[in-house]
Image (cartoon, rainbow, N blue to C red):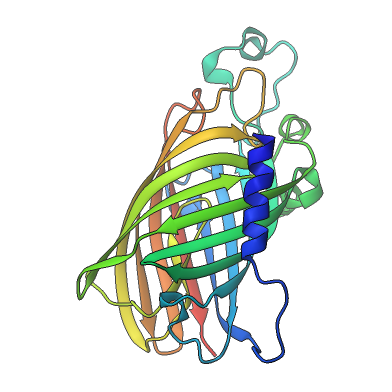
Length: 318
């Protein structure tokens, strides 16, 4: 498995640009971001409770429809997420019977702060769309995300992490990871497209994923979309139309091989996960907007139910 990780990271590294030639000046073509939180879903403030992904895409100015050709778009991606147990304020003592007995219903995942920066290269060849990326991640207290959440929750009068949650969080780690996604986009009609895909990911989590995205009742075919890591929602980064909308839906199945964010002697990660999502992209003049919802199936065997996340962005184009 270690050899496979290094192989995938190396493959992604050599697929990325190694400098910018003077004769091929690049510029920022667009940016995108997506905020995801269960406050806009089931409202339970637990597990995959909040994340933010932001993308900047660079290319030559004349590359208006490059992602349909062999020339590549280069994406700088910033990502942060907070993963929390179902009860942030839990603070059991040594006499906690559930903890001592290891009862299934008392076992929960540890708190995780996660920050990452990545470089991704997007291109098309032979009717397939490719994304090769490498990401460097920080996990644990060093991210400062628990302190940020505590400040926000304190201002809003919401529960914040207890000493027990703080002391049992995932420890500091630096992780180098890779991602490869191969998709086959095709048009079923002028207003409907389908995009089956396969993804392999190593690093914070090692997994293999297969899925499909469908665009319905709209046309943003000239837009470039990136995929959010947690929800799988595809958010627009480069918008070419002045007006348009796209209703999208997607589902994927994940085989989990390993995870650094599901730890604990009694915690057993689910071998398979399912994500199902629906979203709406809307472009009007300078404004580009998205709203969507995603269902995540349980990620560990003791998790008694899935969760619903809400995602949105509002951005202005200049």
